[in-house]
Amino acid sequence: MDENPSMEALMNSVGHCLREWSHVEYNMMRLFLSVHNAPLHEALLPPLRAAFECVQSLEIRLAMLNKSIETSLPLSGDFLENWTILNNKISKMAKKRNQVAHFMAGDTSAVSDQSEFKVFPFYSLTGQLTGTAISPLSNKDLKQRQMSFRTLHQRVHRFYLYNEIRTGRRPRDHAPAGDLLNLLRNPNAQNPKET
View 1 (tube, helix red, strand yellow):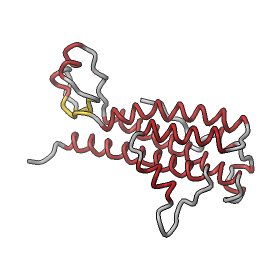
View 2: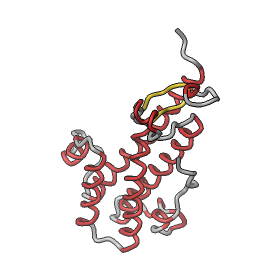
View 3: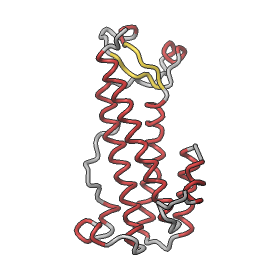
């Protein structure tokens, strides 16, 4: 039996969201290694990278990264202030990522006058019947979320670059307009509406 084109497009958007989120976590690992002055690539897997990557919980990885930043770097208040904002943003967006990763997909005709395939995060019949379910996500919502995840992974990447430049492991010309703090303050991409 062939997939419905609308369902296929929806599942494609789920995949794109999760791909963008994987870049968030990859850049968190890069920042973690940079904070510890550890190499990203070696012939053998660096032990610090292996330790970070064996932790499956994002909350624990984020706590490891946060504590590393708080305790191992002589950083300016600008960096720490911007890191706190980004740390909170990652935590908030992780909840939105979980809604994309843990769902049931279906047609809304059972709950609406209009028939449309959507993702129902953390679906449960009880939630549907009691009105406590999280609102379903349309293909448009997923594309918006994908853009939000992309913006987030770019922000984490800029923190990685900031630390690499600050420690002399990358040339200063990686900073926009020569201002190192611009890497922290001004995202290259617009911040799309978060869904």
